[in-house]
Image (cartoon, rainbow, N blue to C red):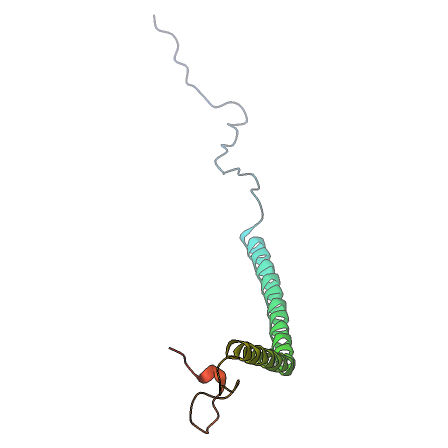
Length: 124
């Protein structure tokens, strides 16, 4: 009672090919494209930094020359202010010391013939 022996055989025409290769989808630009993009962005950034440095240098030069041209005006303004303060101090001294006999307003209290500007005398 045994069944006739039957061997399992491939189908007619053979088995289909086995798909063993990886089938990955396209996942963005290649490395060389990314490197090119980064290089372009960096080059543009350095270009803009260079333009900014040129502008900053020009503004510093302009600032220096404006200060150079303003020095005489500022010195004259300081001299006018110092003269006005000196005259006001002399008027105050005349008013305060008007009752003191022999007091000369504006005369130095030091018995030294050398000139000393008022801002160099330290009052303690």
